[in-house]
Length: 456
Ligand code: IFM
Image (cartoon, rainbow, N blue to C red; front, side, top):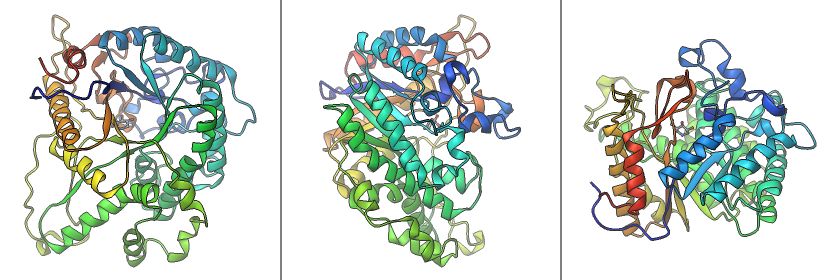
């Protein structure tokens, strides 16, 4: 329950989506194939073999979605650009104009409705043509991303004033090359995973000046998914595993961005485990860290849950019993732990010189369906957001410079490897008829925004 302490008057309440998850229109108006088109059409990769060919058909139904955003009362909307709509194979010299026109019209309409667009340039759906030359493991991706950022900001930068370079580089690097759940689906390849993380960070840094030059008075940041980690017991095994988790999940990205260094303990530990060689780190070239740590205007934080870390390298009988009791989980199986959002934000404030933060995603999957009166009573979603917003307010009161909150997501959509089976939206989408029905959480959030964070 949120108490009556108000958020700052100009606090930005928003929602977020991403291109591949909602747009559909997979080959319309010159769009090329993205890696997610290829991956989702590979049998067995996605639950139910779902794909984003149609998704929410936002490409055609966007006027309806803007009306819903307007009704919801959000002040800002975070969306991403589909890179292969702009450069179909990634290799073209000039952009595909119908792709730019689509976003240009969408942005004009958002602005006419007083909704501030926050643009993410890379929310994972890179052109397949770039994956074919090695994807993010190739240093050529840096130039490709800079070119893409240049053209998008040149065309939209007169109206878009908030830019996010990448969304959740950890997912691309770890899920793509260690867990093998995301494209390209490789497993345990630490060299490719680290190289990918490095090229993502480098391309972020290298694109900042291009965007700044094209989009005067804009703010530019990057979005990281971050998670505080707790050892499952006090054993040195778990404490060590927890430190490793924090290094690969949080510090691998925060340190180069804000401290101009990589976490040496991560590299040492991978070398000790013979997962990389010291010479592998030559993906890091002189001057790279300076480029990565270019000053940005904000950090986007995506928060869903905490991590309770158990050391899996030793047998259970050698370890101490697990001491941490997990709390209730969402339909995704992610633990609900709002206090960790507070802890995370306080830790970031303490450890890094970050001047402005936006919560660029926070949300939960619950599969509530319409009842016989067509009401979708998603009370658990309301509780989830309420508890997290409450902790966010505590963090702001304790000095965390957070200026906005974007709920994930505006509407149910294609949840990557889970297909359409996990619903995060404030709006229920019938994926057959594409009809949108606001859930009870939609009306709750509308009311919360009207009262600037106060629950009435
Ligand atoms: O749906 C995703 C989103 O694309 C990135 N952040 C996490 C969300 C929920 O899994």
